[in-house]
Length: 102
Length: 102
Image (cartoon, rainbow over all chains, first blue to last red; front, side, top):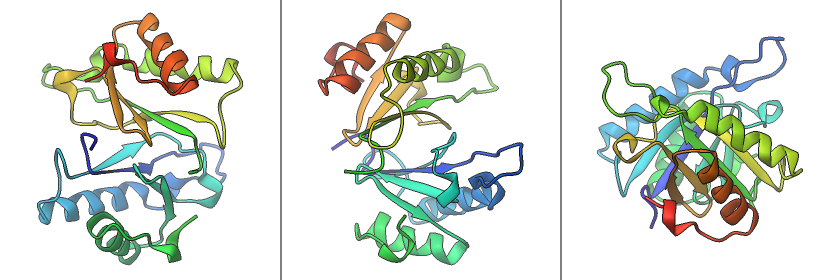
């Protein structure tokens, strides 16, 4: 196994020209929320789960987007309920959330 | 296969307290260099390779660090020669560079 069991990257890109981008859809708040939930459950750290910010993942037109490795599964989300589902179903149980997949 | 064949994240963290962190070791320059090389080779984009910046990967004490997914292989680097080796050997040929592994 790699350093983390699951490594999650939230696209934080903000385009200055006003076109679609993840950073204009609460990406920072949602990343912080996911990170806090994982920490509350004691699932953060080596051998467990890491929730990261990243630069532009180049899928902003389908976003806001997040990718979970090593599986390479991509999701979009709207609100905390979506983040809860990604955390509880994929990150904790290892099952893909087809509803939110892009 | 996922959206990208290989997805690379460079830790960009800068700690304000002066302790070890990737951002104080040319991380931004090296990320840009890797991204440019991949683009020059025409290997950037969907189904190919993406070179990203990321927030703190939490391995700064072993850094500067970079992680390659979906393999989950972690590297450190000093200069452009190290980046070249990671690009040419791992990203292009799919072979791990044991010398730079952390």
